[in-house]
Image (cartoon, rainbow, N blue to C red; front, side, top):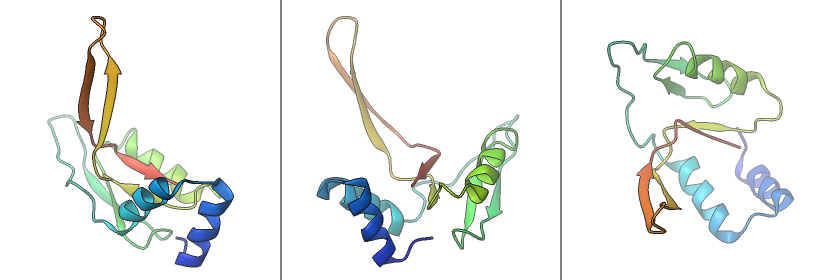
Length: 110
C-alpha cells in the first residue's frame, strides 16, 4: 500500500486531474460501500490481504477470489479496494435518450 508521498508521486506520474486525485483519495480512505451478500450459488468470504493490511471481500470463489490472488501478487498493482463507492454510468439508448444508473464495481485497482 502506498504512503501519501508515494501516492502523490504516482498521481503525478499518471498525470491525473485534480478531480481524479480527489476521487481516488476518497476511495482510498473510505470503507467498502457495501457488504457482499451470498446467494444460493455464491461463496462469500474475506481474504486477509497482506498487501492492503485489511480483509478484502469476495462474492465468488471461482472468479473474484482468484482475481484477488492475482492482484495481491501482481507487481504492477499498487493497491486494490473492494466495493468502492458507486459510479454513475450513462449511455445513449436506441431512441437517443440519455440513460443513467449507478453501479458499484467489485474492485478498484491502482
